[in-house]
Image (cartoon, rainbow, N blue to C red; front, side, top):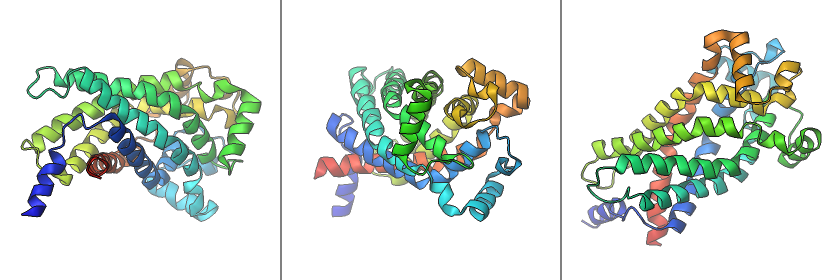
Length: 301
């Protein structure tokens, strides 16, 4: 009987449980999500880069995992994870905090409201604009450390070297592309998640399975749709590691798209699609499950 009561109270928390709770829960969820799926993310980065060396060209996730592990060691798949951990906590705190605040302001928590999906989409997009401004430099450092034969083993060494050689703009050259990608990504993710959660669990009782299924499917859909922009972002963020003059001098999203089209045609825009979807399905499922759990646990403590 006690267990049943606790279950109802967990999911029965008011949607506007508090900005502080949402930010802490988001930070913990973000760190958990990124750390668990980091090796797959490393493979995605390498598959998206236009590498000059045949040793850095991979035919699939299994091929990449086997070759990287055998030639560079399994630790290479975790290179750059410290940058993600340092940035993901604060960025996700801002992300979820902004999401809850804007959703409440826009009327997304009003039961029976006719424009809940609009409020949710606006909240998701607003949250992304704020969190990406904080996370973008950490993402650049992460990918510089992930690429084949990266010279960097330390986040601080990488940050200092990139700044000295390329200036502050190197950390934000991809920010417009990142926003172009993640605003629709987040809007799709949050909207699909909220709608699936209501469809799968209309009674609102505690159901971790609902959070996992809704979160995983929302991440897969959003990740697949935005893959072309993610390829462009990777090219811009790793341009300083390339020996190709055209890539090194890419100025923005249009230049990145031109490079992708000229070198790989339409299929180039799907580079890294499978590891991207594979990353987002479980990581989003875990992120939403963790977020809902931490949100309830912190508020009840």
